[in-house]
Structure formats: structure tokens, C-alpha cells
Length: 412
Image (tube, rainbow, N blue to C red):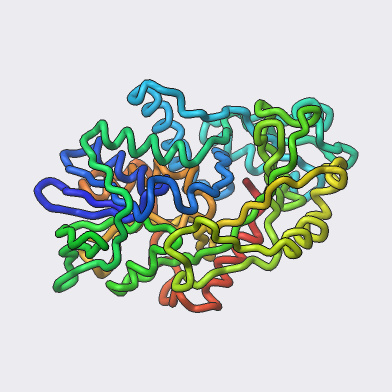
């Protein structure tokens, strides 16, 4: 949860994950604001800590790509500013093709990559095997290798944004809970925290799964819902996996993978997506488990059946961890970003549909440009809070639409 002073006007942004910290960095460096980043716990400790943190540049939704490219530019910039490496593993990704449908979508993705000048190439099934020795290629036709893709530790990225923001003049305030947005005559006047009132004219709601709990206090509905995300980590198998292997996307199996040291991290998008009423969420995600062991095994064995065809060692593989967390999805699996319609001084940076780490730099730059009334570096019409008309973000039917968007997602 975060606070800003914009010019001579105080402002407050809420959220200390990668997006909130990214906003703090950009607002600090792009203008003469005095910025305070405020988090309920410590920076990067919420759902950010459970992110799988794959960063894929080429995407079927073209408007998202410039935001991801901005994140990569921000990482390079912060490495110079902080004089330390970011820990980014630039291993590339392989989109594995094994059907007419997946070949069509992956070939289209390659055309999009070409439009944006992203390095890519079609590789044969044998070349897929060379890069990913653990993959069974008996049904594989080939795949697209996207050279610029990477993975990273999301908590490191969030903290690097915060450290870079501090160098640019920001103050970091942790263990401070924003409880209420204050306003008069449709103008933000402050926020009430557990440590007292912060008087401010600008609020950026980057509170992730909790965002609507605050925005709805001022009658601004954000078109997103908290949706369960799950991934698993195998036991160590240095004979199969190493941290320099590329990530793998299997559209035919609705599965994504990346190295986790000498183990494999993989996520299977379950068909019956689980949504959560944000009013029932705890203040802290520490110890909060969203899946029971029997359901985890059901998803692995039944819904993961297609993935097992690509991964023949699966049945002899130790599953060391099952990680469940919250992603904030919109009904169209896109982003929510911009200025509120009815409340002057309120900006929204949330609803990332599982791409918060990848798009955090883009979120930060756009919010800063909006606050400082600068030309936007990319179009954001498709991220508008108004694109779904009237809706209740707490309604179960609406939340299920958001959960379905995650279940139907094919790309990384």
C-alpha cells in the first residue's frame, strides 16, 4: 500500500507487490513527486511471493506486449542504478506444437513477435528435444523458440523497484494497512490507516486481490476477481532439469513450465476455475492454502493427463511442493489500468490476469504518465475499467466469468 505527494498535492497508492512498487519507482523518477510506498506487510510478501514469474514477451493480446517490454527495460535500468544483478534468467521459451489448433495459434504468435521485433524461430521436434530433454516428442510437430523470454524471482523484482524508488527520493513504509479511502464531493482527500490518517489528493489502488474492497468504498468497481492459481514443483532431477533450460509452454495441455534449479515448476490450468469473494480473504496470505491434497492430485492425474503425454517421467517423479495463490483475473484475461471515472484523484493499477510480474514496468510508466498528464507511451483503451458496462465485482456470476478466463488461457 502506497502514498505519493504529486507536485504540492499529497497522493497515496495502495499495494507493495511488483505492480505497486513499480508504480512507486516510475512516479518517483518521472516527476517531482515525493513518494511513499506503503505496504500492509513487507514489500513483495503478498501474492507476489507465490508468483510463478514467467515473463513471455509475445502475446496474443497485442496491447499487453509494450508493457512487458517496458518491464524488461526497467530491469536493465535498475541493474545499473542499483549496481547489482536482478537474478533474471534469460533462457527463452519453447511453445510446443502437437496439433492443428496449437500450430495455428503458435504460428500466429510468431507473426505477432515479428511485428514487435521480438527474436523468434521455428524449431523442429528434434530441436525441441535438444533444448528440453525431458519432453516426449512422439506427437510433437515442432515449436516456436522465443529467445527474449525469461523467468525471475518476483520478490526480488518488487524489492528492486522499491530500492530504486528510494534512490529516486521515495520513502518506504511497511506494516501499514490502508483501511479506508477518504473523500469529499468526489475528490480524494486522504486514506485512513491503522497508523492514522494520511491526507492526500491522489490514490493509486494497486492492492491486488483486495483492490475492490477499497475502490468500492468510493463506488468505483474494478472489473476483476481473485482467482486461484496453482503450480507444482518436482523433486530434484539433475539428470533431467537445470536452471538454464528454456521455459516450456504446452497449448495442447494448458500447461506452462520453467526450471526451478534442478527441478521443474509447472502449472496446469484447472478446468473448473475457483474464484474467491475478496471479502473473505485474510489480510495476510502467509499459511493461506487454497487447495486440498486430494484435489491437487485430481488435477494432476486427470486434468494433467495430456501434460503427462509430453512428460513420460511424470509417474516416477516426486512432487515436492504444491503452491496455491491468488491471481486477479478479468473476464477477458486482460489488464485493468487507468483513471477512475467518478472519483477525482483515484487511479487503478490491478487486475493483471496472471501477468503482474511481466507487466509491472508498463503499469508503472502508464500510471506515472497519467498522473503527470504526459502523453501515454502506448494505448490503454482495451484495459479500461468501463469495458464491461455495469457489473458487481462481488457477484458470484461475475467472479466465475473471471475464473473461466484463467481456465481457458492457453499461452504462458
